[in-house]
Length: 430
Image 1 (cartoon, rainbow, N blue to C red):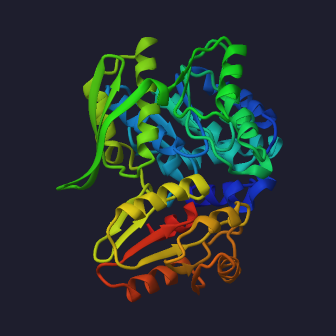
Image 2 (cartoon, rainbow, N blue to C red):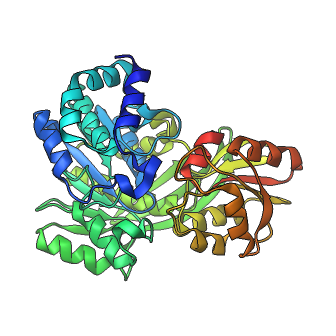
């Protein structure tokens, strides 16, 4: 089966959260357990770092994969969703899964798929396990899709678990309080396996501590153990760079990250402490590998969409932040970037906390409301009307492409254009 036909089959036959939303969410692990059994449990042959969280889990996963790769390990990386190419979800040392592997998998697995009727995401998880097993990776960084406790990736027995920032997102599925959402994320904590939590929060800390205690797992809060001594944005030949120096116990290390969002300071603490904990259980990762992995994260893993600059004069940045916590960090970046007029190419999906996001959006911006090419995307005119109630002004456009072109056309060289509100809006511009 050729790649395009295989992809069409996966998208058409299997319910996909990115396409239809909550209807694709399975509140149990039955299907993924059946899939793993049908394929002779490929997950049992993998060494894994398991990563969950509301925001920062994608960047943290890419950082960790890049560091492990720099340390000389053959490293798998599974993330979601993808921006442009389905195969972005599956990487080994930065290289995407070949099209032929996807085609062969679908061709050979149709009877199993038709029997179990898994979701799109469940199928991608077992596909990742099979690919990493075939490639004989030394270690795989596996990012959860949604939540943790009932996420399809939660059949792995990891070397270590990492939980990044917790905030309100997918409240219809995970709960409407920080404590409830933290409970779902804490579901990745396994018996006797250490866990690193990137940020200490009064609302979620007790949830994580209790779960770790029940599982006899050592828990470390990176924000308590690691301190930044300095952090600044520096203009380099390759572009803007986040330079920071941190201290952990008696160790001081300076990092340079091409991911310049202020929220990376939180992510980097969790990543650094995760590396130190991996070293404690036998993984050999030098400080040079830690530094170079962070510095080379984009070239090593092809990460995109995290306060990524797309062009200059006018400066255009995109960011996949799509909930209040993510948007707040984007707003900090905007505030730190000199500009005359702020212009926002903006779209959202219908099942997000839209009012909560609109409430914090800057009222002095000019908005270009648009709808991504996605069933779940909110109609641009409807979004415009909602935004108007919060004092946000702009025009609606039939497509992301038209919105973006209009923003460029109307801008002066000193203006700032930000593309965001939804991962799928960012994907179409990139």
